[in-house]
Length: 334
Image (cartoon, rainbow, N blue to C red; front, side):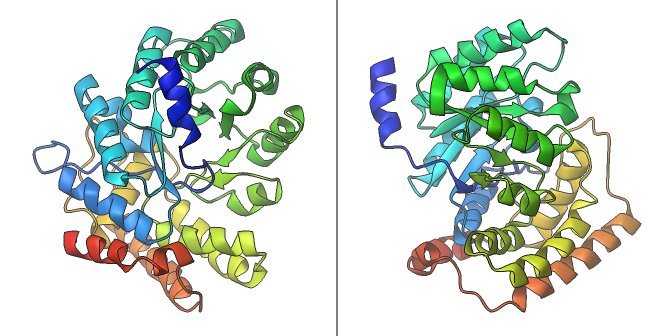
């Protein structure tokens, strides 16, 4: 696909905004990707109000082979089938590999890309800027700069991020994860004149504060989509009663998701509990695993959160309510 073709295709892409959950990658008992489980998960996410899906760190992209990562991107784009946006993570340890992944994602129909900086080596800002420019120059899709400081360690400077926006315009978007998230989000917003699209990426912990600072959307995990969807719509509607009911209970569950492997363990456990996944298997080696006492506590908090959501009288988003086929597909794959 030529750059002109990609530019034309990008015009018709869904707008990148709203509720964009990061999907988990389901594995069978043999640790192979369970494509049936992935289809069930994506249907389930759209049935609960997702505006698109994201393939990123919590999708275990760093634990996939190169062939698997490409196949997963292709499957995600095919399974979404135009129902919303598809964001594909293309971060890699070299600029060459990241640009190659970017071209592949564009070719299989991604709406946008997302990239963390390289993990294996600490480099200066000039090298990081060159890395992101290589991705941006490879395709004409939007690119979300993910400041994954929890994984990388060193935050990206506001000046570096703003300079990419000044150079490439609205194609450059942001997912700030460095602490303090709220203050850095505001600094990034102000440094880009309020024009950049910025996404919340803490699973929902910082969603209320981030929303009032002007985010374009949120990229939570898949496991709590029922609650996060209600919370997002309430924030958009200015319904503080619903916000104040859901957010504390949501944060109580998310307190157990305090590292990448904790996200993986808790999210997959809850996806199995909700009938979306058949297995909670995470590819090892892992740095965190649920023990029986933690499972009891996570389940207790999850049940409390779901009880709060169930007690709120609010219909599904109109786009979902108007399309019962979405719910039928999800139910048939369960």
